[in-house]
View 1 (tube, one colour):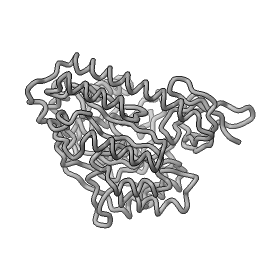
View 2 (view 1 turned 180 degrees about the horizontal axis):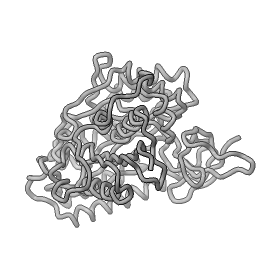
View 3 (view 1 turned 120 degrees about the vertical axis):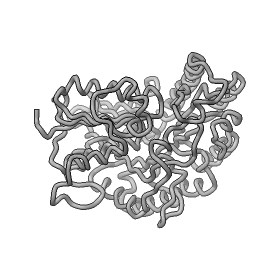
Length: 429
């Protein structure tokens, strides 16, 4: 076992992925080495999530697995569960130290950066190590919305935003390092506001204007989850004019019933308003992927309210959905609300919504498979695979005498069929 080896386990959202990447960069700059698969590590960091009770349980499970695999390792649990769900963790204490705050701050426990490491968003070692298919770019953190079910404000505090100049600089460093796709992410992008950029749509326009002249046709921008309250006339203008932004939206809808949304304290949009905006968006971009976060079994959700959400999901042009049964989080308003929905009912409703989403995903895949050409960012795997601009999984047929695409490489393909919701494709020469 190398005394300077480390391993990072990441749970939860793209923001956690970003912060784990930043920690990885800092550990490499300190002289640590990333442990190989199956190798015992001297340091194991679990970057935790607190959004659901299952996520907290997964944090505990990963810490115990790390202790079994690397019995001499220093184990650190950090991230959202370590910040906002310590009470849940210590009820059945996992091995290791609990360190509140962002994962990247763990490096401060281990010493100062090595001298000679260049300044800027990413160092040489970090860029070399980030051999994943796409790069996450965090532009905003924290939230003040105080949705009734959400523990995130307790874990991350109020909103803070990065200056647009810093965002553009990091995006350029990522593209120069060879990434072909950047995922722009934030805890609540609707609360982005920086001194040099008033809102998220201005930031996206600035990012596209800075990068498109040089990277058009070679790289792209994908948007992470959006609050539906962001969907306005300005959003239409910016998305219509942004050449690097992919035809893919993911909306944090939560429910298709206005009464349920009101109890959730999500009153900055309505189901009807979202539908109307999507119709306008379709007029300027006829084909696009649409994902949604949906929550079932929120306290007080009646059969009629769930039926409204189910009908809404059926009517939406969804291409996939992330569906969660309600998980009570200690300290949130929803935890003490009356009319708690039994867990089996919430799970049954979630299963019904997942069936709708699965059917729509397969139908969407057939539509995309009829296109003459797609662009895929390759991912690691036993056979060439990746995701196209419409966020569908693609299997790329191996061509005799040709090298498979490298992870992160952007390749043009021709759809040759569809299997379930996966596009079968062959690479263009």
